Image 1 (cartoon, rainbow, N blue to C red):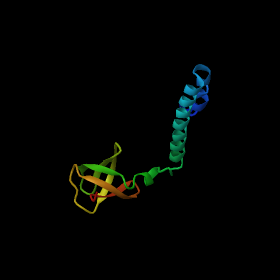
Image 2 (image 1 turned 60 degrees about the vertical axis):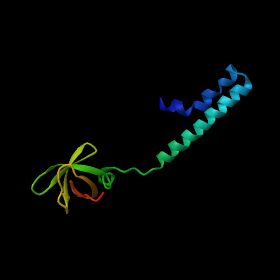
Image 3 (image 1 turned 90 degrees about the vertical axis):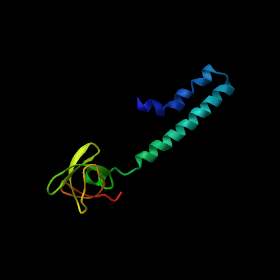
Image 4 (image 1 turned 90 degrees about the horizontal axis):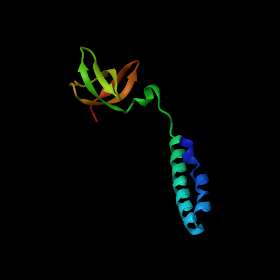
Length: 111
């Protein structure tokens, strides 16, 4: 279905059979401009580097859901993670992820 959008200029050629030439040309130019802007946005998004795994979490924000003796549990993008912090955190505090060691996030509450 998404490829149909890329064919808008081709489908727009049928306007020349239906409408008078000046009206068809006006509509076709509008379709062509929209298509060019859409192609530009698609190409720009395709050039972005993919961030997966732990690198995608660094810099993200979450909040503390519970506190245990030696670690905190924070929620980031709907997932619960163990986290360590140099500061004392309380439940509901928003934190920023600064690093990862294994499956434990290093966080700080300096947003």
